[in-house]
Image 1 (tube, rainbow, N blue to C red):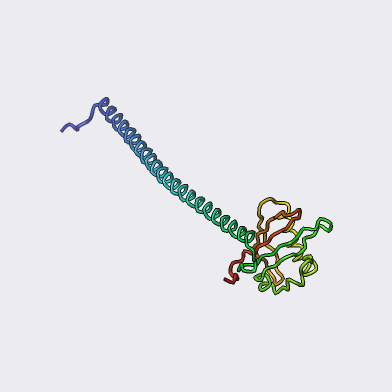
Image 2 (image 1 turned 90 degrees about the horizontal axis):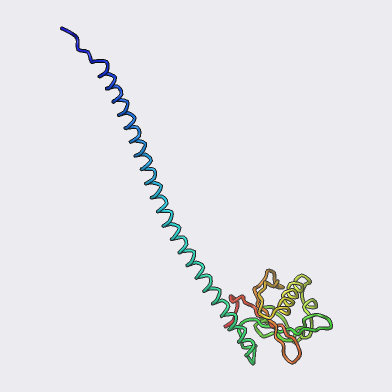
Length: 199
């Protein structure tokens, strides 16, 4: 029997075909892999865009709530300051209120009024302390804290907020504003720590 043998040219063609098929399969696999990566990249970007939109919407919502809270807080303080200015008897108010008169000669702020809520909270005899300055009644560091915020209110045309030290230790949030009347300058103050208001 004569052994079967492929012609040399035919064998070369088969080898070349097999090589071409291998290259084609490799290119096809690479293209598929690149397409899959692009698809995953597009999906990841789409998910990122969705998350970014949600984050932006939540940020706008938080900013809106902060603005509403700020405006509400400002309205409350404005109403309270109007109550103080318009009240004929500040002793009826449940929160501590005080008034100081600016003395241009000494450049100090002299006490001219405390309401009953102030007396109760700070255990102060308002009659005995009228006309006196803070440094004559409280420790130097406390007087300096009050004097600093008094000056800030004096220089400002709008109410200012501060944290004043207290004789009992710690500090309290206060709002102060300037009121010019009859050629005199008064500094009004109001304690904002609502937890101890006596209603």
